Image 1 (cartoon, rainbow, N blue to C red):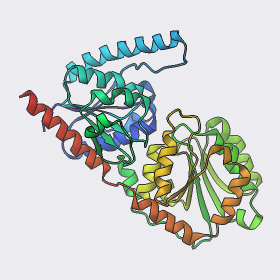
Image 2 (image 1 turned 180 degrees about the vertical axis):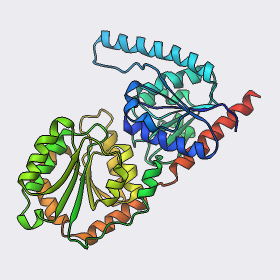
Image 3 (image 1 turned 135 degrees about the horizontal axis):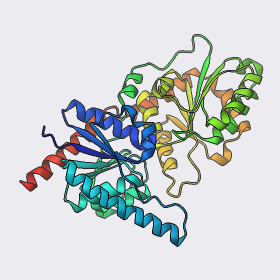
Image 4 (image 1 turned 90 degrees about the vertical axis):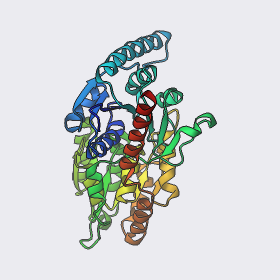
Length: 369
């Protein structure tokens, strides 16, 4: 393998960085050097990112719909793209792969301008705005979900790879669905890497309203925003429910593996990890997304029989209390749903994506020689 790196471009949220991290591990196993270009948000997640270098480039993220805001975004994009051109000329990557989010736009535009081979990975069932903008500029589009829809003119670029999951997810996937031998129903509640207030508003109240006999059987692990932790803990304590609350779980895959049931948003990484590990879930898609990507992600797992999708407007404490009453005493049903979820998990997605990006890099090198 040459010393020219594969340059990974990802927005600074867990949903973008986690699949990029998984690919980085797969590339490292093949002896391919990796560098990462992102924004400053990634510093929260990127301390252990397996890259030999990390580069931060500004992106033209739109903030507001005014003409001034749009002009500022275009200016940031132009500056970021110019910086990315300089970076790529210095780094000389064999290929560039983007994982979504506006921070991927400058490096992929720069790569297209410099005729460096490119791949765009779309994790969701619906292509995001930044990726839609970039799709016509790249050589290949890697689809995280087989249901990804793209315009007919771009169909020939699409390769279904699945969504790469990190090594700790693959380790967690080795854990069988937990038994109910101790009589405890283990509930995991998450809202994505950024947390979700609706989970704090609904789930503790729903659990507290359960009949005493059922409430005594439940143990909760819940992700909550820092400002919500005190009130969430107080509700569980008042209901005498064993609960562990934190803003972020570094060992999230192990928490999924230990759970009998998961209540979560429907980000692509969450859905993919639930499928690979094989755990049943109630998914509450983010309701205000313009492209409804989380709804498409949830539908994929629901159609497989591994999840139930609930609109946020229907996700009330009263609704969840009734559903938990059914689920707590239904181990056979939950186990079957766990198997259904696992049946659509793509455990080798990182290897598939690594094969694709290296093939694109080799093809590009052959054309230049």
